[in-house]
Image (cartoon, rainbow, N blue to C red; front, side, top):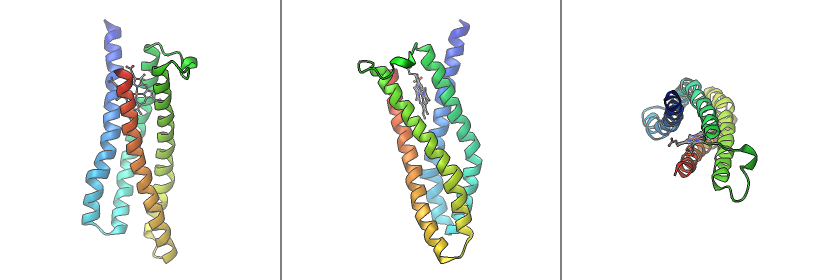
Length: 166
Ligand code: HEM
C-alpha cells in the first residue's frame, strides 16, 4: 500500500518536473521572446532575457535534477539491468539508452547556453564597439539555435519516454 503511494509520487515528480522544464522553455520561446522583440530595443531585450534566464535557471536545473533522480528510480523499479541496455534485442533498453544519451546532450547544451552564452551576450549588449556588435549578432544567432535545439531535444526525449511506457 505505502509503496504504491511512493511510486505514484516518484512518477508525479517525474511528470511535473517534465512539465515545468518543457513548459518553461516553450513559454519563453513562444510567448516571452516575441513580446520582448515587439516591445523593446535590442539592449533592453537582452537585459530582460538575461534577467529571466537568471530567474528560470535554478528552477530549471532543479527540475532537470529531479528528472534524473526520479528517472533512475523508475528504471530501478522497472528492473532495468544497466549492463544489458545495449543488447540488440533489448528494445526497451535501447530506447532508454538513447533517451539517456539525449538527456546528457541536453544537460551539456543547457550548461553552455546558461553559463557561457547568456553572460557573454549580456556583456556584449552593453558595449558600443562595432566589433562587439558583430560578435553579439553571431552569438545571438548561435544562442537561438541552441535554445531551439534544446526544445526539440526535449520533445524527442518525451516522445521516446511515451514509447517506453507504451
Ligand atoms: C537520466 C535521466 C532520465 C531517466 C533515467 C529516465 C527514465 C525514465 C523511465 C525508466 C521511465 C518509465 C518508463 C516506463 O514506465 O517503462 C520514464 C518515463 C518518462 N520520462 Fe524519463 N527519465 C529521465 C529523464 C527524463 C527527462 C529529462 C524527461 C523530459 C524532459 C523525461 C520525461 C519522461 C516522461 C514524459 C515519462 C513518461 C512518464 C509516465 O507516463 O509516467 N524523462 N523515464
